[in-house]
Image (tube, rainbow, N blue to C red; front, side):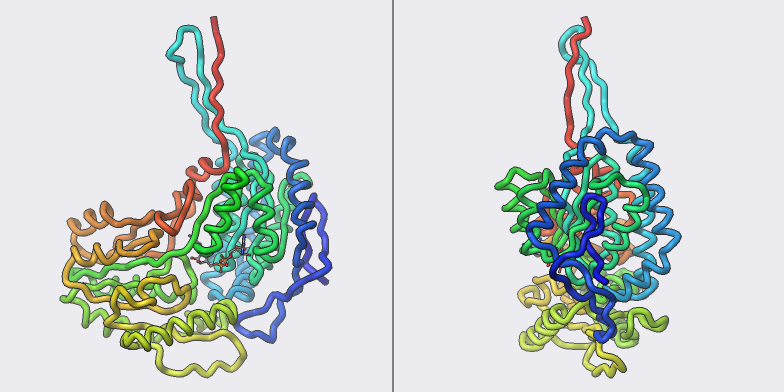
Length: 476
Ligand code: NAD
């Protein structure tokens, strides 16, 4: 049986399909999923278009009820959804259940937002005239999502889009379609009218340009290169566009940092979720008074991490999500060795008892800013230590990147913490916390090559998913 598309309220199989493979055990095929054609994309757009007026006119109570029902089901099934997520993406069970919980809470949050879309009433500068500022849905919204948060990212695009009265086409990543399919099934049964939410499975290169051209707004999360293509296509067609893309996030460790906190932040930020997070801290920028102690303690903690099947209770680091990911990360490791970065953890071979994309976390010391591992997003369990002279050099190094998503510091100094929060060129800053790990009710996003357009999540999401109308009325 094939897991099909959901278009216009009907589940539809496609002529072509692809297998969803478990990266912890590549013999395990989770299921067969639809591979849509351009005609399927056109059908999804037509279904969303046909449903748009009615959904835009639906009551906030109806939207609240449906989103809240979906939230309740996601939370009630978080263990089962987390298991599916761990099986198809490769993050560990606690991380995957955490992501399912987060997805449920996002639906709860936006169920509430449906009740408070905002608006203003102002006196005009002219006599006997009133001015009303209201928010309306944008229309048909396409959401294109990556595989690394296959439940939470669809949730944080789909929930606000629906809450503010838009119809949606979700195009999830090819290699982890199971969670998106499960989410579509939940939304369908939660009572959405036909066509309000559509699931379109398949290849981004085929479907993405059609969605970017023909929807009213497109919200994309993925790599910077693909994001820029989406942006160009959308801009040429006049489609509203929002992009969340790559990261190369620094974590500064100052002399006065608490060593245990710094090591914990680095291990969590660099290696958890197998380093496959846009907010991962792959650059560790360290001042001289703590550098040796930090490198030694972090290398020890890194070597102790247990790599294995994502669903095994002892596993701390699951596999990489795909063979392509494995090849890419390995090439960075080989490049770092060629550039003479010093490998201080990760040398020991792994002996997995099943075929999967397993890789030990790798830690390089004595790295320099010019090395590819310090400049480019690796998206795997690889971190580099750059030793710098002092705080000023650290902040300069932290900002010397084309990305600007998250930036962190470990220090016990209020002065440095406050200064860092002001000067870090990033959309999110963390003090004595890992760069990865964020709340669901506040804005998420970055600067420079990491993001484009308004922020996602929290009440800031309404900037993208609504359009403002200013209405004047003569009252005389
Ligand atoms: P990707 O860019 O390869 O794919 C992302 C999505 O885009 C997928 O659904 C894919 O099918 C689709 N796509 C591919 N080609 C397309 C095209 N030509 N037009 C339109 N869509 C197309 O990224 P990925 O490998 O799935 O995810 C990893 C990347 O995502 C990393 O760079 C990571 O930093 C980034 N990411 C960013 C955030 C953030 O919020 N900033 C969050 C998670 C992941």
